[in-house]
Every structure is written in structure tokens, then in C-alpha cells.
Length: 99
Image 1 (spheres, helix red, strand yellow):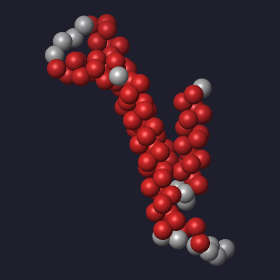
Image 2 (cartoon, one colour; image 1 turned 45 degrees about the horizontal axis):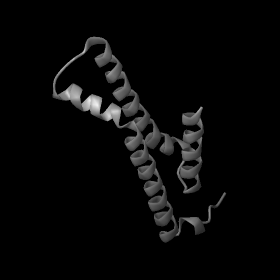
Image 3 (cartoon, one colour; image 1 turned 90 degrees about the vertical axis):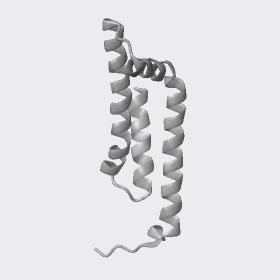
């Protein structure tokens, strides 16, 4: 439920700065795939007890999901603020669309 609400908030934020929802999804979905991939790799590791540097990184990433989450949220906030700033500086909010 949280992810759906978060994604809707992000899509709404991106559409307010003249990007269509598909552009917002381009930003949000890869992050979800990466997080899901890390979790999937951790589940595989739990079942088979792999060893090596790659699996150490997977375990470390999985153990620090709270920090990663804050970094992702920060990245989206900074991206949104930058896009809003560019939107205002370039004057896209004053563009007249002829029908």
C-alpha cells in the first residue's frame, strides 16, 4: 500500500512540472526493479548460502535498506526540486498552447 501511494505521489509531482506520467514511471520503476532484485538475490542467498564478494555486497545492501531508502527519497526530492527550478527558469510555466 505504501509503495502504491508513494508512486502516485511521485507521478503527481512529476506531472506538475510538465512531464507526463510515463516519464515519471521511467524514473520510479527502475528503482523498484533494483530494490526487488536485491531482495530476490538475498532470498536466493538465504536458500543456498552462497559465498564470495558479490554475495557479501548483496547482504550488506540488504542489511542497510533503511539508509538506501532515505538516499532514494532524497534523490527523488532533489530531482523534483531541480526539475521545478529548470521549469521556472526556462519559463515553461508561461508557455501559451494554441489549440
